[in-house]
Amino acid sequence: MILAGTDIISISRFDDKKLANKSFLDRCFTPAEQEYCLAKAKPAQHFAARFAGKEAVVKALSGLDINMDYRDIEILKRKNGRPYIVFHTRDEKILRIAERCDISLSHSESDATAFAVIDLRD
Ligand SMILES: CC(C)(COP(=O)(O)OP(=O)(O)OC[C@H]1O[C@@H](n2cnc3c(N)ncnc32)[C@H](O)[C@@H]1OP(=O)(O)O)[C@@H](O)C(=O)NCCC(=O)NCCS
Image 1 (tube, rainbow, N blue to C red):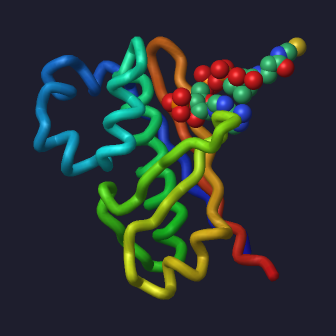
Image 2 (image 1 turned 45 degrees about the vertical axis):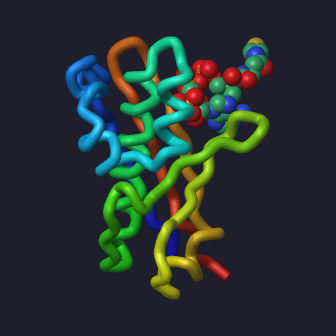
Image 3 (image 1 turned 90 degrees about the vertical axis):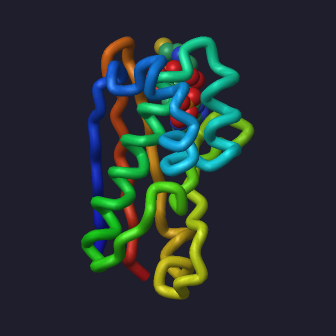
């Protein structure tokens, strides 16, 4: 079985007021995610892409009746730019599938989108 999840978000949701709201950022994004996005020329599109990524992962996980806080789903980058997911949990069920998850992000001027898959095949 392969579980998929996708999401699309308007970047305007991450306006200056939202990005200045530290408690919002801390609730949704890890310190490493915040550091990555805030270092970019246009942080909003990177925050929006990560938010879409977390929602896509949550949608894929719902196929296993698993629910997670956004803060516990971290989206980091490999050296070549490819994103990957780190799950912050002790739940064995989630840790067992962690290596079977993949994520892809994209953003334009107006929207950010993400697609997540969990490949449960042997
Ligand atoms: C990897 C690549 C396809 C990304 O394209 P892009 O249009 O800049 O990417 P988008 O704006 O749609 O999405 C950006 C997201 O892609 C993801 N990304 C970046 N590099 C990536 C890679 N090597 N693999 C997978 N995903 C990647 C990132 O998550 C990034 O978002 P983030 O910075 O917020 O994390 C592009 O940088 C690239 O290297 N293209 C190959 C160039 C080429 O061969 N051109 C010849 C065409 S004829």
